Image (cartoon, rainbow, N blue to C red; front, side, top):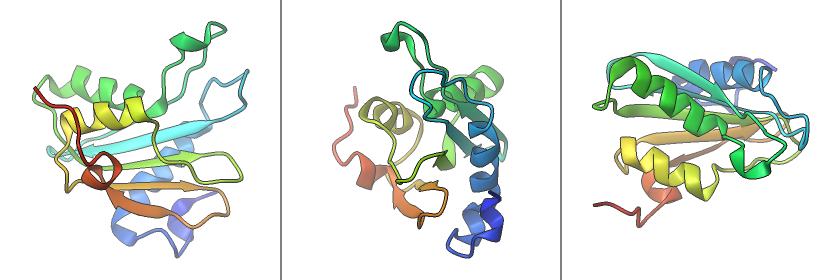
Length: 139
């Protein structure tokens, strides 16, 4: 699937949606068969991707969103800020980021940052960090 060819993906999010689809194809998901990709654009304009990486010890599995964020921090440093984020899952349903990922996203993004999550053959959902996690934990 190429998300930019899907008219239901907003044009401003299409490049990130496409990158999320490509990242999901590289996921390591031998246990769940649940391939997830994430792409984010930082305030500096750089795009970073991540995919889920499962482990036989399920608690050690890392989600696509957290992998993309870790890659962005590794490249741009602790001041990295997310400007937009897209997630794609190879499934028959559309799923939002999990609770842990929502909290990590909120650590690096303001409440108005757009988030798109989508799946093959399903209408994408466009929301914001604040809508996904209205009372994010902050220190």
